[in-house]
Image (cartoon, rainbow, N blue to C red; front, side, top):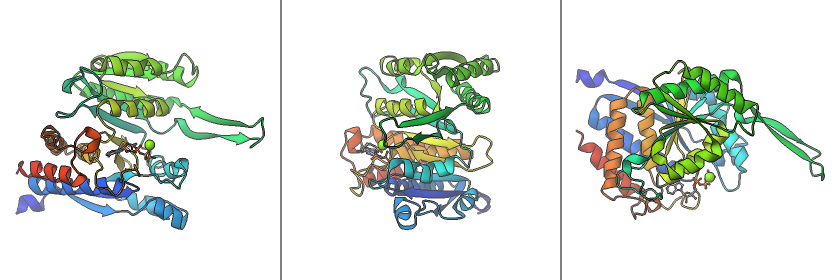
Amino acid sequence: SPSVAGQKTYSIASIPADGIGPEVIEAGIVALNALTETLQTFKLEFKNYDWSSETYKQTGKYIPDGGLDELKKHDAIFFGAVGAPDVPDHISLWGLRLAICQPFQQYANVRPTRVFRGTESPLRNCSNGELDWVIVRENSEGEYAGQGGRSHVGKPWEVATDVSIFSRHGVERIMRFAFELAQKRPRKLLTVVTKSNAQRNGMVLWDEVAKAVAVDFPDVTVDKMLVDAMTTRMVLKPESIDTIVASNLHADILSDLAAALAGSIGIAPTSNLDPTREHPSMFEPIHGSAFDITGKGVANPVATFWTAAEMLAWLGEEEAAKKLLDCVENVCEQGVLTADLGGQATTKQVTDAVVAEIKKLG
Ligand code: ATP
Ligand code: MG
């Protein structure tokens, strides 16, 4: 029919990579295909890239020559997890994830966290509506800029340095992004997290930029918090928080805490965005390769389903994204949960249940 022929098609590069990555990405693609078939409002075309720690061990490279140019042809990147027991973490991280994030200028890392219906937070008295956060992480510089080095290696007087880099340009663009995001959320509340009492250069610049940008967003309520105090607030007063913006390192740590407080690391998604849209953005579950459960068919696919929904929203398919997330939450409420959430369901059982919910949309 003409309406079907006229459907917009998005091209997605999938990179399942290591550990449970292939299992959850497969589940994600099954759910996305069910969604597009049911809704008939747009199409997705997937192209798979077999780049992983296995490839690295065989060829010395995670990404083959010309690989990034290949990726550029797609509208988005759907990423699994990278990391293997026999490859040092800093090699796998810089070899694949950061090798995409950095050249593609994915400077905004967005990590929503919520307690789903049917799941439980480890916090006492923290129910469904009380933990609903988005953490915005600076993803291009800061403490992970890769600057520094070692001298006098192995000597008792050896020194090692990791230099944090905070550019006004870098801080300003992430701050603006965070304010815009907070403004779009119902509570319009932004917490700017720093450690400007101890880190007295970059973090002070961060505070200054926050104050300057705030002027352009009079409807957003801003508060400032030191990162150590923030961890306490997340545990003791979760309902007081909405949107958080923090540096690369601080937000990395806060978002693991956030994922755990929401019930499991198996739920949370993360988006690596190039807000200029010059390059494709990359979407992945927050968890790693989790080799302890790889191949057992028990990985929680919910983080990847939510990742898929975030990807659709970024592509402009907000309504479909909302529907997908709703289906996932319905399945949680039905009690179809993997072991990390206290249930007994397998990856496939959760996926099948989500597909059944999706089909009800038709
Ligand atoms: P990486 O080194 O890539 O970070 P990891 O082995 O440290 O990977 P993480 O993904 O960080 O593992 O997760 C820590 C633990 O949480 C895992 O060992 C696993 O037991 C559990 N876990 C992570 N993701 C999931 C998931 N999707 N479903 C169920 N359990 C999970
Ligand atoms: Mg880990």
